[in-house]
Amino acid sequence: MKRMILINVLVVFIVGVVGVSAQSPAPKIDSNSMVFVESSEFGQALSAAMLKKKVPLLVTTNREQAKLFIEETSKADKEGAAERVTKVLAFGAFAGSGKSYEASVTLTNTDGIVLWAHNAKKSDVRRAAEDVAERLEEHMKRQARNR
Image 1: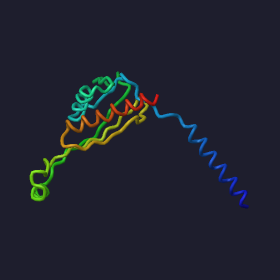
Image 2: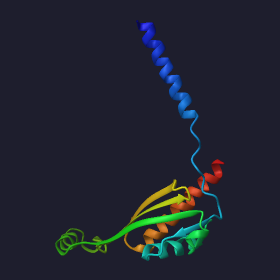
Image 3: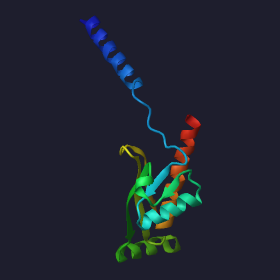
Image 4: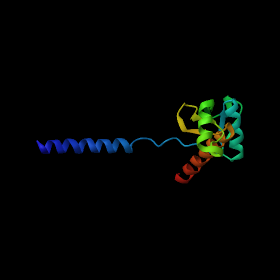
């Protein structure tokens, strides 16, 4: 009985290992691919940040030319008056601005496969866009090193 259980455990382990090793590698983001970025306040800031940070992708305004697509959801929050007063009383000059901007971004290919995603929460839209651009550039550099 113990021998049969041991054999079953070994079979399950071997099948699991073979199944994991048989999976195809994650799709790579090719440098100089055309990427379409949605036309929104954050999308425009992200396009500018990608150029500023020298992300190795070509931003296009023509969706039909693109091989990659950046989609985002974003929102700006401002503290309520009571929350702001409490922070100023507690932290004085170190209370911060009371504003935050959050953006969630996905990069997909033409098949709809998500190649990369990131969530940024910063004090304004520009900083959030720059954070996303920096993380995308870092991801692409890591991919290039691992090829």
